[in-house]
Length: 150
Ligand code: CTP
Ligand code: ZN
Image 1 (spheres, protein in one colour):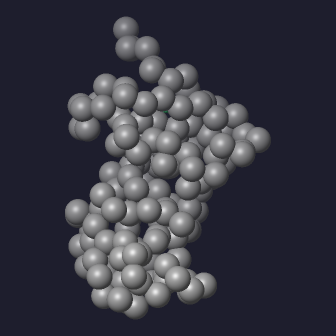
Image 2 (cartoon, rainbow, N blue to C red):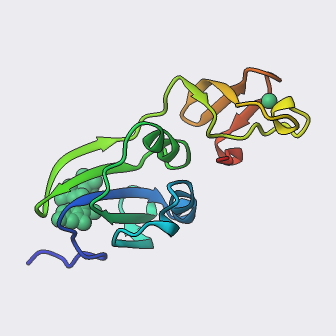
């Protein structure tokens, strides 16, 4: 017998799986899912072989792209995006951190000009695992634990 799913299967939409448990609500926030009209189910602190504890979000009839996926990658670098069509997983992708991050993230340096003027932040990704972002204005490094999404 198949073991029961911890969060019910969906018919059409996206399953964001393997989110670090403590980042679950950050993902909900950066995707503005709290104001979505779509049907959403989620769980956190679920058992995971890979992560120990994981979070999962299932959104009916939403398919994420571009900047939305970059945002997910920044706070949940090992997340897997599963596209569900008629109950089947038709596509599975691992999110990937781009080489340059424009906007999205706040610079960790409180003195950085981007934290004082209306300037779009720009970072060069100097490491993807763990994430290290070098600000193109102040040259300070923002690390994975310090990433705050704007
Ligand atoms: N899923 C779902 N609704 C469906 C089909 C799948 O919610 N109709 C969910 C599953 O519960 C799982 C994820 O989508 O969390 C990926 O499904 P699947 O690839 O079948 O599971 P695994 O092989 O366990 O995934 P992984 O490779 O990510 O470990
Ligand atoms: Zn800076």
